[in-house]
Amino acid sequence: MAKPVFVKIPAPQNDHLTKNPLGYRVPAPAPTLPLSLLPTKSMSRDNRTNRDFPDTDPGHAGINHYLPHLRGNPSLLNPAVALSKGKMNVSIVIGIPSIRRPMSTYLYDTIKSLLDGMSEAERADTLIFVCLTEPWNRTYIDEVKEQFRSRFPTELAQGLLELVVPKAGFYPNLDNLPPSLGDNPIRVKWRTKQNLDYAFLMMHASTRGQYYLQLEDDVQATKGFITSIKKAIATNRGDWFILEFSALGFIGRLFHSNSVPNMVEFLLMFHTQKPCDWLMEDYLQVRMCGHGEKWAKCLYKIRSVSRPIRPSLFQHLGVRSSLLGKVNKLKDKHFTHVNNGSSYMISNPPVANIYTSLTTYANDIYDAYTGDKIYWATVAKDGDTIEFMYNPPVSLE
Image (cartoon, rainbow, N blue to C red; front, side, top):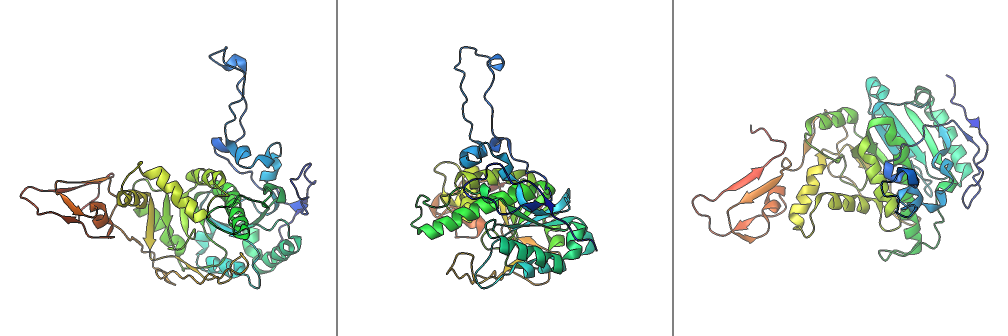
């Protein structure tokens, strides 16, 4: 079995802050950025309809605005290391960010669990894309590369498994970040870098297939999880943004690949402000909820596009976090080790609106529909109605 090789490339002309210690890679496909993330050029005077307007650049945001140190250095968006066969056009790309943890690693067990959970046909139509976000630690990178070669030679040769490492220059200076949420500087730095890790991973991995699945490097997968995901995709009608195959954090979030750039831009826009899972919730609230709208109705609208699917297909295994001193023993109570391909939403079908002639006494009628609370109305009269408006329509059985 031929081993994937690394090709020597010249060092970048101007690496930001830290000289990149890595000089080997196989060229990987460049990320496809949304238009709003691409650098913009000012309009020429001849192309403007109003020739008296000042000849200025409006300075549209773009990735150079969120990460200004990248201005003039677009090569920093490419990986420093890529162990890749360039597999494209798969159904599902599984993105796994990974970082060295003190005292233990779960990455190899996570990959083995994913591989064991797939049939040969599913392997041919899937890509496992691991992003090792330790560009400053060459010793660890070399160790992971050798482990991949020894543990997963067939999967590397088939293009089923890939390993990429960002360039150190992709990251801005993470010292002296503005404080937020009352977190200490170490935690602010950790979660800020995590947002950048996710953005880099999602930019590169999501371009390789139809759907993008976000995991962590410390999970166990249910056998048959790909079959379950494809059945959930087929049965979830209407517009959805995320299908949630785990109840924990950012684990098991499935996106249409063409919607990932919006999430990436939001992560970059607020990467110093909040953790990634909080930003995902904020994005959904901005996207779905009206100003001043009751929270019960807002939450229901969010659940109509971010849909929890049960049973959970992924269990959190890790205990020691990559944040030194942090212990995370959370377990998903909805997880099952073996799945027969069946899945179900844990809520009623998405409803566009609910109308009622009843006079509300307590709570909101959306609370009752979601199962969160009872809806309490005053005495009902003959002719009072509750109407549920579905778009798309639903079949009654």
